[in-house]
Image 1: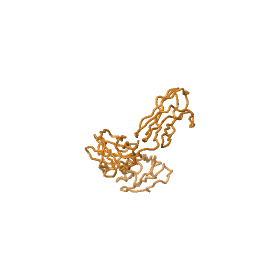
Image 2: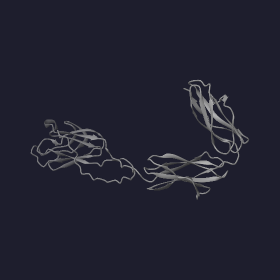
Image 3: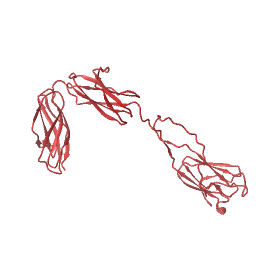
Image 4: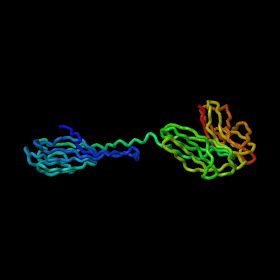
Length: 332
């Protein structure tokens, strides 16, 4: 038995490469099998198609061996009822669409058992057509993220930029209204992935609402992120603290890290640490002044190996006491 190459007429759809990026299923086709043309046979006797395709049986013009044949699903003497053309004369056509994958045997009612007039249709799952390739370059993609390290007179503006395959410059616009009026120094990025970017700004007014957004440009265009706002801290107040991840962890020692804004008042700062959130140990007090964030670190020792420790930063000034979030680390 010969295996049929798929006989089809395909309309080739030329899809613009910049359309939505979704996989599609190949166009359904029709495969032709000739029935009893100068033989007691189906030609080809075996065909392979995909779900959604159709087989078309065409009765040969010559009835040399028999004037009538059928295409009946099943095996000789055991029809399964999936399809049955009935006995048809030369020149007739019968079709059946196959919607599910599987192997489908069929035969001729008159000549299947006596003469081996049988066939088989193998149905495969649909083959996805290649998806359009997204453009390799284009205008930048930007997002304005929430500001961080907001102090009385300074802040850090945050965003993300995907240069989209082209050298891209970006900056932040900021000001007290959506007219902005102030910009950060331009920075340059390259590549094809989203990258987090920041810019520090100073000389702000305490207790004031500021608007900001990211702006990026390359040879394919300029894009602006959404407007965001933040409010600077009052000139003085309770300290602002952040517990940062530990570093330099050994079996018996580690470095605890945090960030502190004294918020315009003389502030004492230390770390609490221990094997539970009751802590029980504290590092030496340090004194800080000013209105900007700064890194605070303290080395601790005499730790036990293979032990989990909790820690947090604690700061106090005349405006109050503030504690950072709890963090943990495990000694090796």
